[in-house]
Length: 138
Length: 163
Image (cartoon, rainbow over all chains, first blue to last red; front, side, top):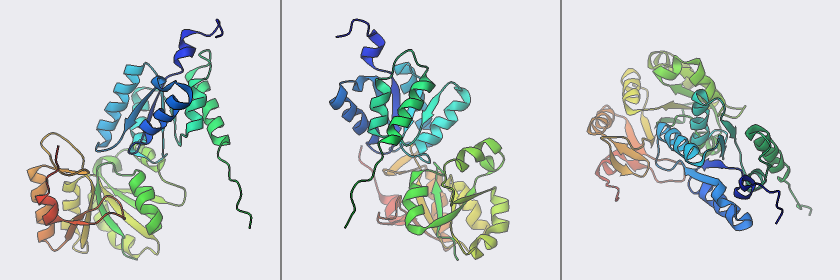
């Protein structure tokens, strides 16, 4: 183990992952299986909740984890709308929509010397680059 | 072209509306009827951000929606009328006898509401309002996504969600 790795880096960069049904828990579970860094992420689901309640859950999750970064699934999803509402009262909040597994994996391993916005932006670029189409030739 | 859906959904514009209904119905416009949203530029921007570029959003209060409903019904594109609560839909139906069906798409948990389905929680007042809407000749049913079975009002109001 590299002795220069900080405790924060070992714990991973923290973020809330929010989305429809079991999307977030599935994503966090996958991160845990691949990297062992699942504890750096807090999953939130929109199931059964009105918009205001989703915003409250996001706030609780952000505060509990001590982070200012949220990843959501759909740009038009209710978690995204709730997070955008939160940005009104928490302008420091960084929101990334359209998240995939590669995005969050990249994020948890980003250096703690980066700002949340820098880390989230780099993770989003990584996730975008993994969307590839193969085959289809007949 | 008639409006494809008159929907009550307290999340207003979100995934189920834009993708779940939007894709199969090829929705090209949403009339979002909400007095508060119609009075707030910021709220409108928030919801506008959530729709794909091929989908137009109109923001109306109940009064202006009622005035322009005939125009929306004549639009050649497929559209949806969306409200955030049952009271707003009741006002809209009262002002527009042309509305013949109402879709309950999402009324979530709040104090005083009883769980009827996993996506429908109702107060006694809301149940009364739904009965009044149906008594005026409107077919009311609950259905969150197109692939789900529409649940008629009578069945909805007798449903009891466990837990």
